Image 1 (cartoon, rainbow, N blue to C red):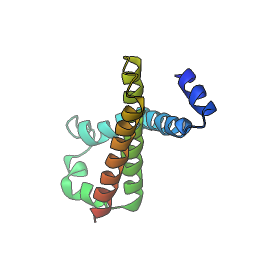
Image 2 (image 1 turned 135 degrees about the vertical axis):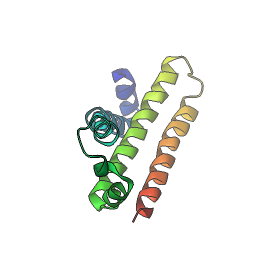
Image 3 (image 1 turned 45 degrees about the vertical axis):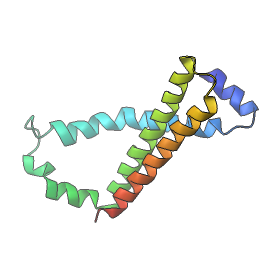
Length: 126
């Protein structure tokens, strides 16, 4: 992986930008997603919190808060860019070398599209 980053940086490509999004997404996903899953999916069934705490009405009000929207946007966007970068290099490592540019456009384009869709959906929540 380090070889790809150094090679792209010398060529003046924007690989370091994509790698930065990949790294930020990996860190955020590794630290936040397990806690997010525990609180939203496991805490009530395990009896750690009352069921009403994660009810629809309360969650809808919570998601309508601007800071929660920023959190969810970061979780969605950075997670998608982490996936895109990892997926791109898995395909390259598997030997799909002839379509490097196409893979990059499709992977990062999918992450951008998912980020835009996520932003639109978050903005619609009131």
